[in-house]
Image (cartoon, rainbow, N blue to C red; front, side, top):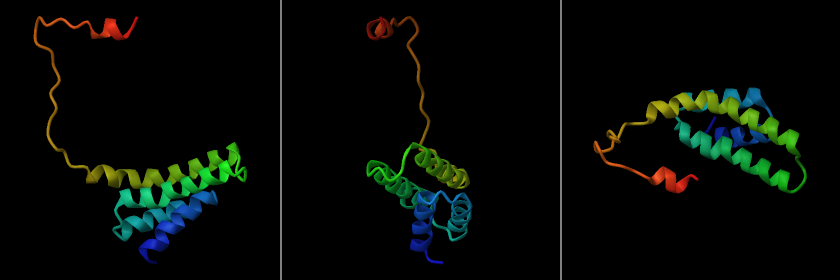
Amino acid sequence: MKKHEILDGLARAVVNMDTDSVINLAQKSLEMMIPAEEAIENGLSRGMEIVGDLFAAAEYFVPEVVVCADTMYAGLNILKPAVIRQIKPKGKIVIGVVEGDTHDIARILLP
């Protein structure tokens, strides 16, 4: 199976509410070393874009959109750990306030 077939299959499976296919294709994408971000963006997300178009055209309704979203999340649950492993820390962030410094920002922004 080629990369574009997997990505197209992910999108199609989301549109067709085929959770088993999404799970199988998500696992296969990892086996084929397709970056998880790419599988999410060009597969699962693209499928949900098509679902949005079908909803706008009144071909899909809220129940179908919800099931499609659940199907997409089944794939995300498989791909998410791979995305997290790919994240490399870029440094540390330190947040603090100088002792004795007074801030009134919260009172200004919030009544």
